Structures are given as structure tokens and as C-alpha cells.
Image 1 (cartoon, helix red, strand yellow):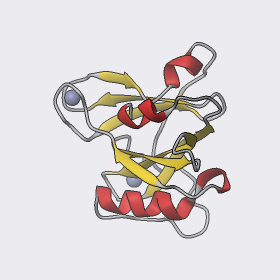
Image 2 (cartoon, rainbow, N blue to C red; image 1 turned 135 degrees about the vertical axis):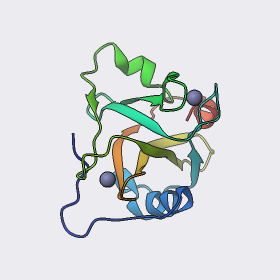
Image 3 (cartoon, rainbow, N blue to C red; image 1 turned 90 degrees about the vertical axis):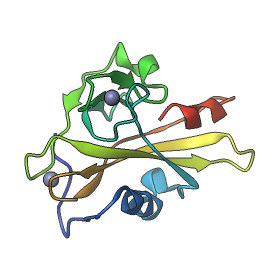
Length: 145
Ligand SMILES: [Zn+2]
Ligand SMILES: [Zn+2]
């Protein structure tokens, strides 16, 4: 899978740009209210290889530093039926910084999730998967990026 770079590719110099990108990208037509950067629970690393199934709504990230694998957010629920594909940038880069954009309801429950990625090779920004959250409580998802 290649991130869509039709038209002008979005690029960013840092993980902070990824948050800006997610807010403007507004997946699903919903404004992103909060972003959380992904970091490895084992070594605090921030560079990952990714496998994603945008149809089922799931992303698995593997830390480049230590190899720890984490099914992001509620991806475990979808993973059984998922057909995950490795994520690659149009530059063939396969290592990304990752951040999750959360769209919240007035109740502060989560409405929509967007998984944003920044290719560490050339800085191109993209969204590898986004999906709807239709249950509550859902606030725990903010801890599971
Ligand atoms: Zn790690
Ligand atoms: Zn790239």
C-alpha cells in the first residue's frame, strides 16, 4: 500500500507537523480534536513499521528499535478478519512516525480515529487508516495509540 500523494504531497519536518496535518485532514469529515503521538511501550522509540487494514479498521505497529509489536487502539477487535498490508511511502520508505487523531463527541467520547504517518525518509505525511468508533466508553482509546 502506498500513501496517496496525488496532487501535492504533504510533507512535514517533525512529529508536530503530523498533528497539524491530522487536524487539517479531518478524516471522515470530522474535525480532529486531539492528537496523540505513538511511542513504543518497551523502549519509547518513535519509529515504526506498519501493517494496516483500512477497511476493517486496524493498524499494527512494530518498533524499529526493539521489535515490539502493538495493535493500535481497538485494532485487536478487527484483526481476526483483517487483511493487513504493509505500509510504504511512495519513496519506498517503510519507517514512519505515527500519531493518532481523535475526533470527539460533545460527551468527549471518541467518534472517529485517524492514524497519521510521517515517512522518516522524506517527510511525506499521510493517513494509513481511519475508522469510526460507535461504542462507549471509549476514552481509554486515547491511551492506546
Ligand atoms: Zn521499542
Ligand atoms: Zn517517503
